[in-house]
Image 1: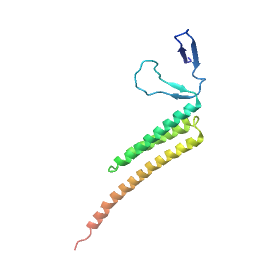
Image 2: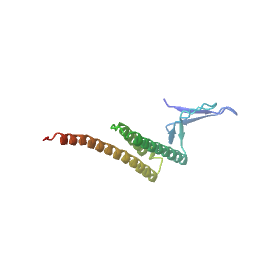
Image 3: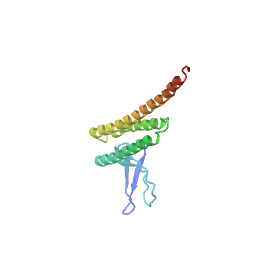
Image 4: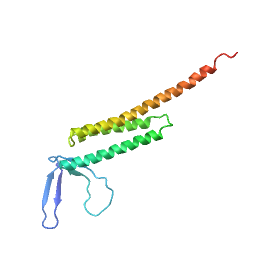
Length: 159
């Protein structure tokens, strides 16, 4: 069964235009706007114009990078006292998922220079998370090593 779209013009005559979804290529957008208004409700939209696709994706990627940057900064501020690095692992998994989305979904719409710049920014964020995880692990191992040395010094022979 083939899905088709029908656009009806109500004013001067009823003209029907049918579009085949499989023949059209472009970037599919699903709006998350929750504002209720009278008129047409849009569940999904296919953007075909390349310049508009590029503008939409650049804006979307910039917002996503800003979000990840703020998230990582808040992680580094809030997780200072805890030994658990699960929040860093979740952030690292999210960045890996985002990297793959950029490489496989957005590459056909954006130029290679912009994609490479975006991947370098993602690499920088991943490196920051990994270095913080390593620092926390080294700090944890150092803290567990310190009390053992103090116990050895105290257990010596007393005269």
